[in-house]
Amino acid sequence: MKPLEELPNIGKTLSNKLKEIGVFNEQELKELGSENALIKIATLKNSGVCLNMLYALEGAIQDMRWHGLSTDIKLELKGFYKVLEKQLK
Image (cartoon, rainbow, N blue to C red):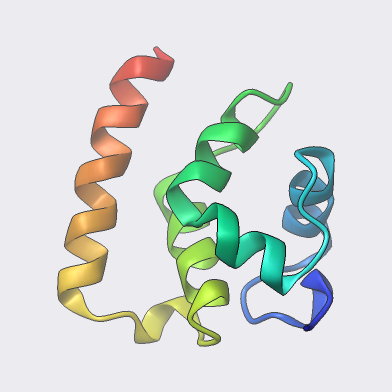
């Protein structure tokens, strides 16, 4: 079980946001899932949520740079993000 900082795509800023929502390691992120993690991060002040953050979270869960996510997964995540974005406005 890796700490957040050792996961791909997770820098200091995103790691801090994850800790603010109660996610402290790889296992907890996997259990929560990228979409639910983004929803929780969106509740933080100055959350800065964006599509690339969602890709980064999913890539971290799959232990790969987000650029390597399949087109299908990216399309699915993009659809989810568009719905979430409307709810956040």
